[in-house]
Length: 130
Image 1 (cartoon, helix red, strand yellow):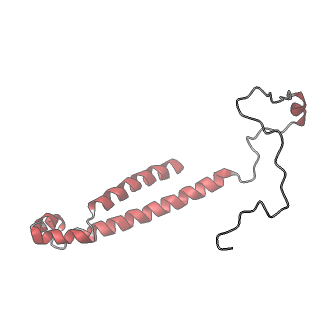
Image 2 (cartoon, one colour):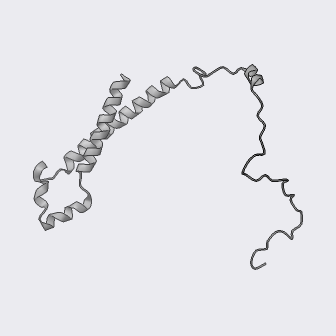
Image 3 (cartoon, one colour):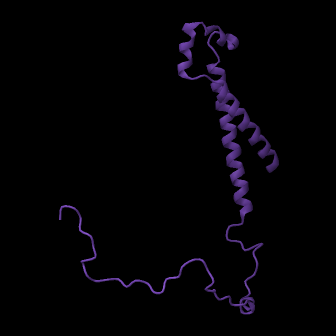
């Protein structure tokens, strides 16, 4: 059942992309005054607006329903709070691990000591105008 919903979901997503690309924007009507008005007569005198808008609405509704059903499937299969498939912690393993000490053969310079914070206000730069 889940596989069928995924297939429908992907097909509807591609259909929505195609329907959106077929629609023309509000500024496309300005081209009719320059002789491009006859190109919109394929869907009738009213143009393709109503058909494409209704088809996009139906496809978006189907996409929403498939998205919601896939989310419900994912939640039921997630097993929230379940430790299934996780390794069992064994504290005895930590005792057998070797302790690795860092070496000083590094290109990164080491700080000898951290600078001590000063309590005097002389080190604090003053703001302009003070």
